[in-house]
Image 1 (cartoon, helix red, strand yellow):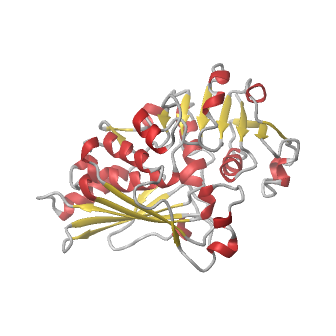
Image 2 (cartoon, helix red, strand yellow):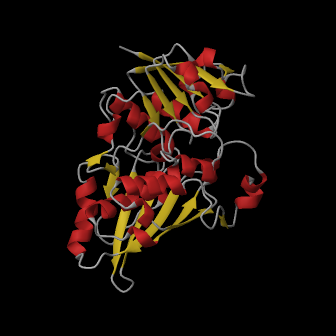
Length: 349
């Protein structure tokens, strides 16, 4: 049976990437695409690379337009998805690619976003350890899914195995990320102009202010870290590449943990995963290696001089970081093969 899909925010980067993946999905039909200011225009005027969807026209993002589909994907800025939730109660599966339904803590929502705290949904990172099992077990049969923040899921996947195995101390985590500007969305912003980002690297949301921090803490707490014992220094740096995240995260080694136990923690966590790979010792990923692929690629170093573990992880922020995670979670929720319509091969050069 073919399932009908509506995608909101279809003129944006996240919406466009979700459409690119779903266009090759054998079990769904993209029936409706919506936008706000671009409503009434052809989809290919904003997503010219989506040639197979050239017949679609952007409709207004309203509850009436979105209702009546088997699946609705909300690819909207934070704070805009929750307004459609009540109107979509009859929709079998709703996936939010924004931040509205990620956080379980009302206090975290108030501190980093503000306003009324929306209901938390099943978190769309299947490979994370949650209470001793993988998050995919909580996604099976789910009807409401919160796709992750790209930076948040990258750091969480980097460190959760060490937390779950008890070989790293979550009380002193440092993460520095090189990120591409597509993660900030498609709307015009002066700081994202080519003349502002080419030839330079620009830190932003420095000093514990980035909105993905509570999401990372939530994921690490689910992996077994005491929530009050997580200390995270998180610094993203905007670099001149359209796509990609290279996250370098480190944490202290717990007393008594051997090198073999440390590496086995990550090896065992991801040994059977299609979309997360641990590279051989001494090998570290580049963002170019995962361009266009639904892959989180990571290398691990054990620094005994500093008594820390360092994990370097690379993802395509628009695929594994957002759209790929959404489609992967969709497949699990519907009982389909998890790998359906998801590329493992990147694009090079």
